[in-house]
Image (cartoon, rainbow, N blue to C red; front, side, top):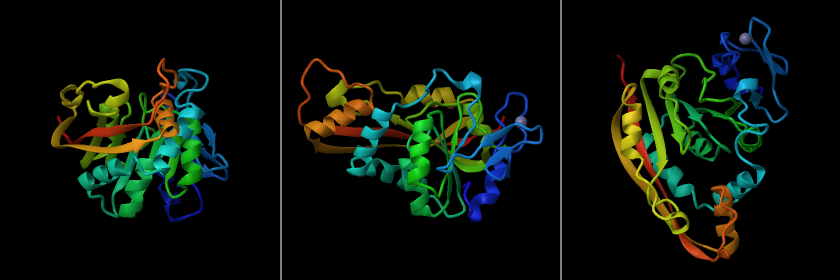
Length: 270
Ligand SMILES: [Zn+2]
C-alpha cells in the first residue's frame, strides 16, 4: 500500500529491481528509492513501475487495453466470481496472511481474496495498463509493475501465500519470497476451460507438479468450474480476453465453461 494508510509501513519489503542491487526501497515523497540512489516514481493512481529496460519484451509488454476492458466486463458480469470463490475456499485466508499475486492482471482475484479475509495483498504484473487499472479500482492493495519471471521485487520470506492464477511460473522466486510454512496456489486453465470456443485443452496438472517439484510439494488439488449462457457481445469479450478476436465464423450466442485446476503447494527445503 503506497498511499497514506496503516499499510504504508510494509513498503520496506520492496526491493530495488536494478540488476545486482536489490537493496530495500524506502519511500521519499512521491518516489521509492534505494540507498544507491535508484529511484522509482509512484504513479498518480498509486502503483510503482519497477520494470527495467531488459524486462521489456516489447515496447508495451503485457495485456492490451482491449483485452483488459473485455476481461473487466466479464468480471463485472460475475462470470468469473465462482472461480474466485473456489480459490478462496481452498485457501481459507486469515487476517494476518500476507498475500502476493504474481501475474495479477487487473487485480480481480487478489481483491476478492484479500477483501473477504481482510488481509493484506500485493500484486505484481508486467503490464502497466493492467496494474494501473488494478490500482485505480482496488486502492487497498499494493500494485507493482515488474517482470516476476526474472525477479520478484520483495525480500525473502515476505509472504505467507503466493498466488499464480493462469500466470507464468517462477518456482525459485516464489519459494524465496514465501515463509517456510507458506503456501503457493497455482491455478491452471483446465482442459474444459472455454472448450466450446477453443476445443478441449491440454491437462497441465502433472507437468506443472513436476516443474515445481524441486521447490514445492503438492498438498491439495481441486477443479473449479462455472458455466453460463453468453450473448454475442459477451462471447466477443471472451474472445478478446483470450486474444482470439478474429474468427472465420460469425460470433454466436452460446453456453461457455470457465474451469481452473487449482494446485496447492507447500515449500520444501533442501
Ligand atoms: Zn538500487
